[in-house]
Length: 308
Image (tube, rainbow, N blue to C red; front, top):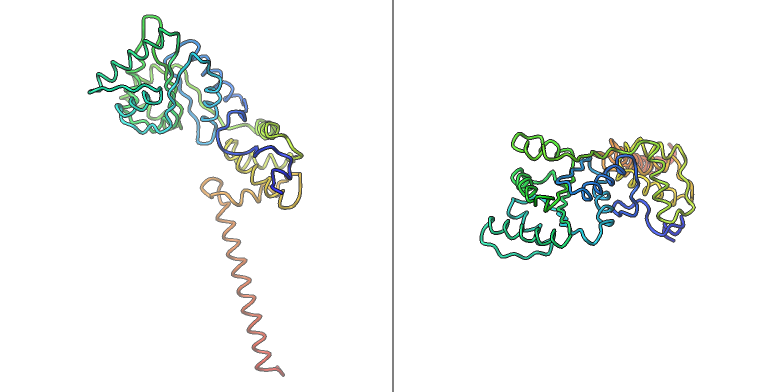
C-alpha cells in the first residue's frame, strides 16, 4: 500500500510542481491574480510580479493563463537569459510566427505587422517572462521599445514579468529608469501568514481528495515556523510529514512528524537540519563500532585469561 492509498488521497496534495488547480488565494496571491486580469482587460502595457523563490509566482501565472479567453494569444518565455535579437526570435517562435528576416530592423517590422493583424482580428497579444531577473539589461530595454508599439487607441503587445527580488534591483538601475517609469502595475508576493498556512494545507488536502488526515494545530504551527510561510517549503515539509506519519501507521500528523521531516532538509534551506541529522548518525555509528570493539576485546581477554 502506498502512503497516498493509506491516507485515502487521489494524488499528492503537496507536490511542488506549479499546478494551478491547487492555487490558494492568500491576500497577495489573490491581488496578483486580479491585477493580471485587470492589466489585460484594460490594455495596460506592463505588469510585474516579484517574490522570493517558492512564493508561488509560477502557480499564479499558470492559473492566469488557464483563464485566458480565445481572443488572447501569448508567448511564455521560461529561459529568458537571451540577448535582444535572440529573445525576439524566441517570442515569435512561441507565438507560432516564422519570419525570415535579414536584420533586426526587418524582424521588428514583421513583428509589428503581425501584431497589427492580430489587433485588427480583435485579439490581444501577451509576452510573459518567468524568472525575468535573468533578462540582460539590453533585453529589458528591448522590451521597453516593444511596449512602444501601439495604435492611436491601444497597445499592440502587453508584457508581464515575473521574477525574484533581483528583478526589482535591476529595474532600479539608472539605465532602465525609462522602463521602470512605465511599470505602473506591480505587486510583491509575500509568504503566507500562520493563519493562511493552516488554510493552505487544508485547501490542498481538499483538492487532493481530503482523505482521512488531520494535522494537529501544533504540527501546522511548526511547519509555519520552519517554512517561514514559503509555500514551496510548506509543501515539502507537509509531504515528508505525511510520509513520517505513514511509517508509524498514524492518520494524525504531529509535531514530531514535522521535526522528522525537517531533518531531511538541505541545511541551506532550513538551518541545521541535514547537518544535525548526519552528525547524529555518524556519532551513533561510531558509538556502535566502539562498543563492538570493546566487546571483542573483552571476549579475547576472557579467552586469554580465563581465570582473570
